[in-house]
Length: 260
Image 1 (cartoon, one colour):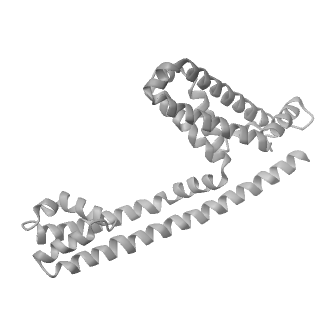
Image 2 (image 1 turned 90 degrees about the horizontal axis):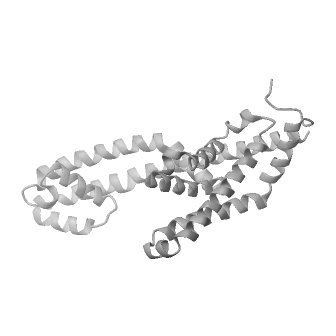
Image 3 (image 1 turned 60 degrees about the vertical axis):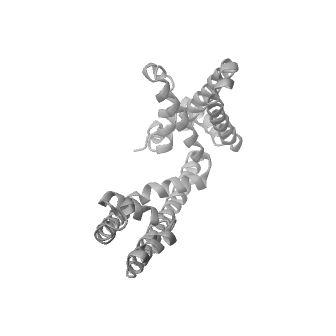
């Protein structure tokens, strides 16, 4: 069984009208512009002089954005009137609903810091209207398990080299290798190859074999591990692109079925 109402019912007609509005390109562009305006208002509030002199206008503009976001959410809910369960199958719908409804909760409105963070979260809604950004966010989420494994291996490499550096350079260079923490921080900064030349020059003054230490670390940490991370992200990006294309095809089939 499906949760879709017949097209001839009142819910079906309501869903058809709302769907025609929400699926129009101008509707998405309008919501996108409102999100950008809301982000600009948040930035304007950070200037104390402007906030003091134009606070009333900024507050009215913020309330206007909130009204438009609420109207948008009502239309989106109306577009699923004939299939209400389908609304909650889309994670973006749930995210939008939580962000908009949170602005009306009394205990959140009384907390200025939390309210500003929730307003900032509205900026993330731009991903709904930018397919490429949506794919990137999905790729980042799918790459988290592989990234966690990468971080563990990277931490292990840094720890081993930090211990070797502490043993070899602690007495000669205590500022950078005086403890395991200082050595790990030094090596972490060297991962970007920034300051590697100065480190090698200082190491050669201690021992000529330090070039082996720095060269092997730069090769392993800055080239091998970073390329592994890039491979993980690119693989997740391909998977996210395939998922987005599959979702687009599913939405097209659903739309044709609803029209039929």
